[in-house]
Length: 209
Image 1 (tube, rainbow, N blue to C red):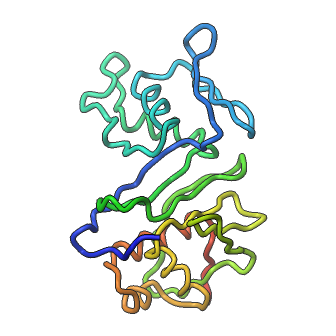
Image 2: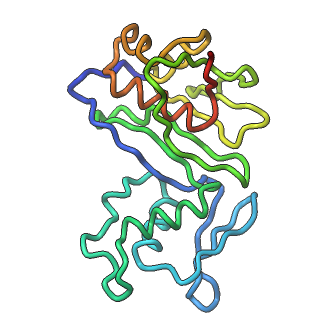
């Protein structure tokens, strides 16, 4: 684990990658991208160049989608590049890893990894004054330098890479509001809330009335 974050390195990045066990290649006709892995095969028919490039780079590791977006989109099809990429990734979200990182060269904060074919992920903005806690069924284990948070019935697991995220997780052992967490933790408010948003989006939290 690395040292805590200071305000000067707050700029957050939302990164996308494919599961490490996925391989990307073209079919025999060269018109369809085939994504193969233990969970099965996915086919992306006749992808625009930006989609093909995004998937190729995501196979190699986390990428910032903004770096792949072409300002003019796909002029021949009248499409906006970012919309097309996000639409495609939404269709194959059960093989897409979402990672929160900071611009401080210390590595990712946490990653949300799909573990089932029905997995769908969206960052959730939790109400500031609603109490939340960790879902009772989740477990926390350690693999090397990474904390793993997972539950048998959940479609994702969360990999905690840095102490900032683990601090947030530790407070979720008891019902607590996001506002209270922001007050207690020595982290920028935006980072605390974003970590919570990733955890909630992965199904790791529940609201307590």
